[in-house]
Image 1 (cartoon, rainbow, N blue to C red):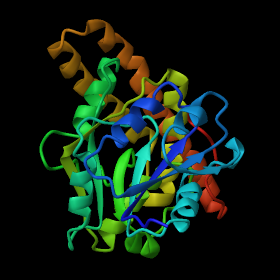
Image 2: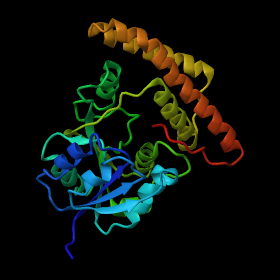
Image 3: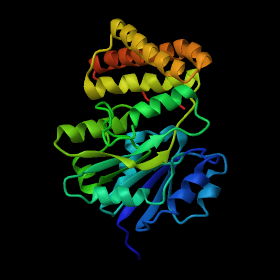
Length: 292
């Protein structure tokens, strides 16, 4: 049986509209020393059929059993390679040396985890493009609050064995991983030259659901405090930044929508935060949910 240096873990669920692009880019990479492990959580479209054209191993779970941290930990337990790479089913590598860059950096003795730079899709809404430009800048330095991001990323398995993915909250398992590694003296490296395309045009409902679970998770990860005063300050700050961005790009209509979108964004985080504080006080885990 052929042995590999790297395992690519790809999670899928009804990704038929994009997964062919993701897999074509993956199997066009210069770096070939990998095997693909797919974890599918109940796809009902043509996702599995499209995956079947490529060599892979498949783990199938029920949709209701999907919990990011648990799924990732269970998948990694089934690997026997020194390097683990995570690739979202809707993340397309834009150059054929992306994996090569990722693994070369991961092989460095003083580097323990790595993550790629993400750019928004061509159809992304202006506010999405702005957020991605801030979160994943062109230069080599990532924002201090961006600890780790899974869409294309990697970790040494021996480091995961020391620090597995967090499972007490449903969301932000990558943030928690990066935060823990940093606090334990490990190096998480942002690779600005490793470029992938990945973004979502979330509806207001999806924004609310996503930010709610992120607000929950942050209570368990950071034990931070997010009050109504903090909400107002964060809202005003984001509106100010949006105003500068949209005026600069002559996007007056998007600026008008920003007032509603950013309120939902901040309010949902606040509600999730409060919910988690109550649950944590009772020594309970965060509520599980799917923000899609």
